[in-house]
Image (cartoon, rainbow, N blue to C red; front, top):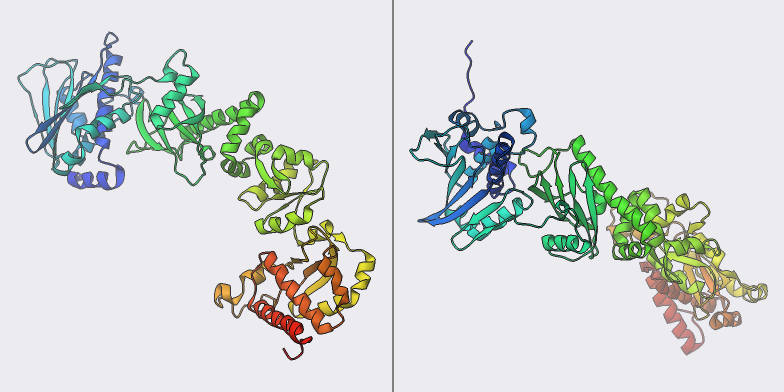
Length: 594
């Protein structure tokens, strides 16, 4: 039985890298930077006297394009290592697992990424263990050649790339320098850029957590320069191999907005996507974090979802949460201000996290019939007066006038998260009583009309009941504010289904389904007439049944409109006919025949 080896189409692999592995061609800059940094670290481990590592990137315009050179004075490669590591895709140049774990790059894959922007790669290298230097030239068709130049060079490696066409137009001097500054922001190895117009070090940065003592103002300035925005506060992030800061935004945010961070692995920039690393509920922060012990994905643009990633995420979450706890104990004013800025955002967190709920609820704000109140004020008020909340904004608007002059406290829970937060309140505050307001609650807040008044209008009430019989709406008398309000309409229990499942809403979609409902108004609807209203008081003078029915129908329609209810076709027809009948009474003294 014969054995065969796979044949690999290098150009096909390069297409796969471009289309599926790397998010952008610019990753070749990071890979070359990583290879150079790893080579310098390897030389430091082999030679304790070696301290002057540096990386130099040179950009030169050429005929038809540009040449880019990455040079380092690291450990270099022997001839055997060139064959083993440069020419074998995916094999690491780190010789044992102990050493390899301290690096994140693989020379073969890192070099392969260069074929995303060029068709030929030239590497000139000299190992610290040899005097001879070697030149390796690899092409995108999979061929390579090794020569021994008759020149001397210091130990290290140079990688030369030619950029032409579209790549040359995209990777300008400015673009390359900016990318190097981003990728190498935290690298301790100095990176020098030599271009046509400028020569400078691109990573000479002040890193606060590397200082023995950093002032709070310096740390804030550090974040503001990185993210180019002002922040409310900063939270130190620390843990096993974790150093960084979470900056609290001054802008209102929400969980749907993509937040960009700066996340580094062993000082090399990896990603701005923190979805797998920064707690989802901390979306009002922007973080810069360096970690030492996470596993990068194949593209090294993210992290493998393993136990190490979960541990790091939990440590960062604890840092942010402990910050909030500290504020609640030592700086309540700052916590209150923070809650005001991110009121909606924190409400969304409190819905999902019990610790966040207990910590922040006293500082969250809610609109009420007595003005905006904090959670702390609601809890205290519930010990003295009845507290209820409306889940719908329209209900709150209808109820507020009715509560004028009373001690009842009504919370508007119609905004996002508010009703859910109020519903959870008794779970965390055992002595608090707060109830959801529903249609049956009207009976408790509306005062009974005087018995003499009810007796005086009993005949009108019976006629009025007949006038609204087709709409299955009862008529009764109550006493409520304001006096100018003639009547209050309260829908029955099935009003939602009736309103939403009519033929105009769904164009007959539900036709053929039996929901046990008629097309008329919902069963149990009520029309409360206000015994304090002067016009209602005069209704006892009406002596004709048809006039009484016409009047109550007009009042019914007015109450629907005042309550912002949508009129059904049947109710619109009623409005027109009752108004015509009233005009006939005014003109002819009778409404008969209309």
